[in-house]
Structure formats: C-alpha cells, structure tokens
Amino acid sequence: MNKELITAFVDNEIRDAKLLDEIKHLIDSDEEYRYEYQLQTLVKRIAKEKYKRTTAPEHLKIRILNQIAPEEIKVKPQKEAASFWAGLFSKPAFSFATAIIIVISVILILFNRTPQQPPVISKDKLTPDNMFYQAENNFDAIIQGKLAPQLISNSPEQIKNFFETSGVKYSTLVPTFSEWSLLGAVVSEDKGEKFAHHVYAGKKGEIVYVFQVDESYLKSHEIISLDESLLQYLEQGNCYVKTEKDKVLLFKKIDHNICAVVSNAPMQDVQNNFCNI
Image (tube, rainbow, N blue to C red; front, side, top):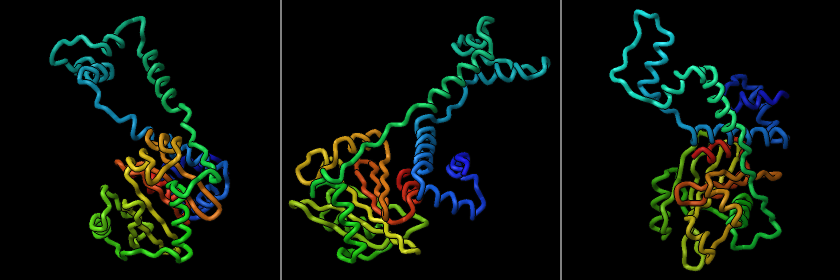
C-alpha cells in the first residue's frame, strides 16, 4: 500500500469505509506503517501546537495589494512607517522571489526536524512501585475480573467527586469519547496516599483503563516512580505509545498529571483520543 494513503488518513481525507478499515488494520499489524503513522501524527501535532497562524501587519497587506492592484486603485498607507519587512521586499538587491525562497526554506527546516525518539522501557527492570508496572498489572486484573470498579457511573462529575471525597488530593481529568462510555472508577491507597483510576468500555468489548497521578509523586519517588527518561520525554510535551500483542500502553502529561492508559482498543483510536488532549 502506498504510504501517501497514511498521509491522507492522518488528514481525514479518506471517505471509503473499506479503505479506512484496511489502513487501520495495516497500522495495527505492520511495524513500518505504524511508525509512519506515528511520525506523521507527531509532525501534524507539532505544526498545530508550536506554529500558530498570525495576522500579517497592515503595512505588509497594503504592499501586497499594491503589487497586484491596478495603478488607479492603489492602496494608500495611513502613515509612513519604516519596517524591516517593507525594506526587505523593496531593496533591489533582495528580490521578492528571493524572500519567498527564504520563507520556504524556513518552513522546510521546521517540518524536517527529526522527532525526538521515545525512550526504550525495559520491562525486566520495572519494580512494583513503578507506574508503568502498576498500570499494566491493573489492566490485566480488570480483564481477568480480579479488579472491579468501586463506583459504577457514566458521569464525569460523579467520578471526579468520588475521587475527591475518597481522599485523592490532586485534581483529576475525566474526558468523554464517542467510541467508549465511562464505566466506573477505583481509588487505590499506598502508604496513606490515594490515587485515581477510571475505566471506559466500548461496544465491541474494548476496555480503556486510565491511571492518573500528580507529577509531584513521581518526582519524589517516595511512593510511586517512573523511569526518568520517560518522565523527561513526557515533560517535553511528547506522547509515549507502546504496542504489545494484545494491548496498547500510552503515557501523556495532561496539566499537572501524568496519565497512564492501557487498552485493548485499536492503537490509533487510543492515540488519537489521548495524545490530542
């Protein structure tokens, strides 16, 4: 399959349902196409978040209009102003075409930056106090029926209130999604501190488990920990995604919380929903 279809998929340009299913299956099953999808999603997110559109200055608008308008309807500036950009385009030795080349070069530099590579997490070195370790084990316990919600609710406000009244000391985020419905929540305790967990369920049997912890707990390492390279990767605004045979593991910093997500839902659904929060 042509990788340009991955670009079209990321840009939501594909309308054929059968082709959409084929691309989703290919992303889930093929490492090369999964990497291409993750790379293009990252680049698009960086472009949205880091390089916002800005309005052109008034003097630049006037200059552009004067270049394309007939002589009799030239736009007159309200006042004379010495401008770097006006001077740049008006100097004979520095043509408009040259300026365009510079602008294009800057754009190419921005979009061709090598994305930061995610850290490699060795599961053999994970300890029971590690958030990565706990999130995966908790998800397995939910799937096996060993861990049930203490509160059954599909209301984000009820779940957040449950966290607060149960002793969770940090603010929590409980988003809603079209693919999955809220199922319930659990509050765990470790060395006298309370931690927030909630669960979503999908119509096709998907389970999405979310474990969120205020970052201060992970920096003190007194109760719960996280690999330093992963924590730094998240602090820089990245979204960590790891796929295994039967599940997806995702880490994302949202506000002051580090969120661990474990799910048996399709990887691109989990990534699209949580990495874009």
